[in-house]
Length: 126
Image 1 (tube, rainbow, N blue to C red):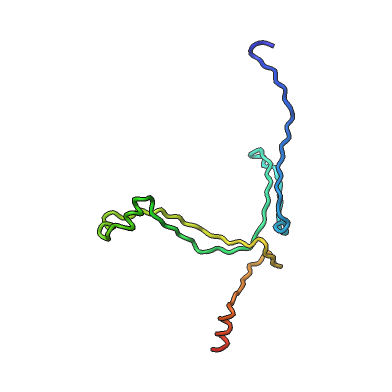
Image 2 (image 1 turned 90 degrees about the horizontal axis):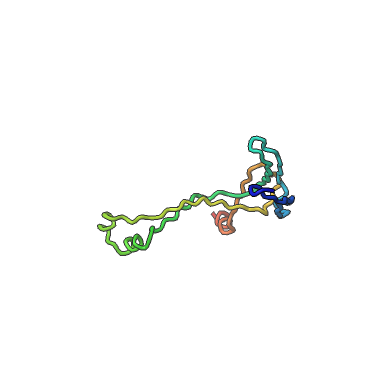
């Protein structure tokens, strides 16, 4: 062996992936495994659905820093018109999911009507 080469010993290393899933989400699960020859990868795909509802977009605004908060609280209206408060704005899309909800027809859209007992009693008296 000369000065330009170095002898190394390779060993076979094991690689694995494991993830535990709750049995209540496995009812309608689809598991796919395929070879992506273009990217030279093996793809494991797990899909499922949950029942849920989308809420209207929630917008949160607050002053950008302490100086903007000071202006917002203490500046008179004429000064705010000249030097408006700079706000940080976040747009949140809220999705409420019900992972334990079991419905007999999973491919259909379902509408649940909820009525308060007071509303039902008022409707009966009218």
